[in-house]
Image 1 (cartoon, rainbow, N blue to C red):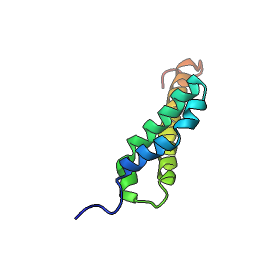
Image 2 (spheres, helix red, strand yellow; image 1 turned 90 degrees about the vertical axis):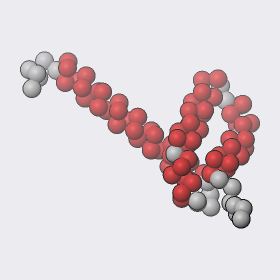
Image 3 (cartoon, one colour; image 1 turned 60 degrees about the vertical axis):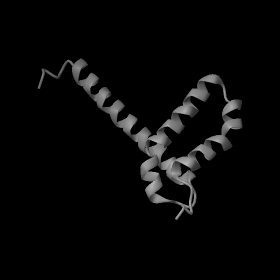
Image 4 (tube, one colour; image 1 turned 180 degrees about the vertical axis):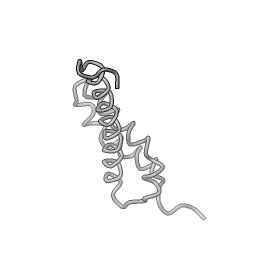
Length: 93
């Protein structure tokens, strides 16, 4: 028996196609950022496919949010580490 719904990855390809004119209208540096957002979406395609949401844009947005949360956590950790290394009152403890 065949699938009744397209896979989430198929839906992503269609979503990417739908946004291609928008992407083309962006400045080059913003096109790279836009492409990165779609890379974030693809990184979570398996989880989004399990959800099988009727509106594929919602899990795409959550995927972007998850990746950006991860980046924020990493940057906050780096900042804290740098602050500790440069803090003269911190004597290595």
